[in-house]
Image 1 (tube, rainbow, N blue to C red):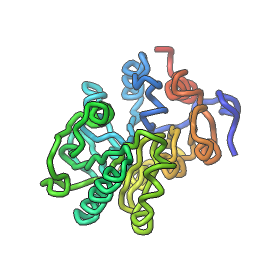
Image 2 (image 1 turned 30 degrees about the vertical axis):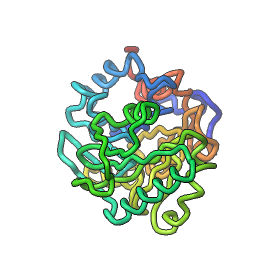
Image 3 (image 1 turned 90 degrees about the vertical axis):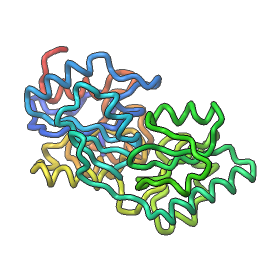
Length: 283
């Protein structure tokens, strides 16, 4: 049950929000991957009010930290779809994959490539991401989300803890690569996180589980939590907040799950909703 797109059905009085959690791609960022121009002033206002801002993304921690560099003091980063939580450079929580499982997934992708599927694997380590595929088209997609990245000959032998395996399919991921991963879906999460990306993680890992850990650690309730999302990997996170917003551009399942709808990512829906709910002065 949710409102229609826009800001209808919101309370007229400011609400007690202590934690704001937002997905990045398709949510805070526009379709070109750019943050809103007034993001930094809004972050400053939230800091003044003691409201914690938390990016929650499939992106790696290093990528998120670079995006918020200079404004990240005290910020909680829910990275790699909830498999790693970091605050002030210190890891608060993680849920790494068994290395043997990670190796099986990499080998499965090698088989798909040999069969002609246009897909590549990103082994998402805590320190950097690793890929075997080295063509420019694939690496251009990897670079958008993984600034700490290394090309390796054998991604099953990296010396790093593995948060998850991300797969980029140049075709529709839900129709192409996802059905080929059913053997892993029996024991792990296989999540279509966008049109072209799939994440394979532990069953216990998701943005919602990470958010609930943050709430417990900080003594913040779901009623004091504001969450924004647009895709299937945001569903559990929306369940952890009473103030749950799907973007107007969200996947239908996300629109059905959220309590409210925010304007689209291209209309600065996250910031306009924050400003409306918290009665922030125009930035």
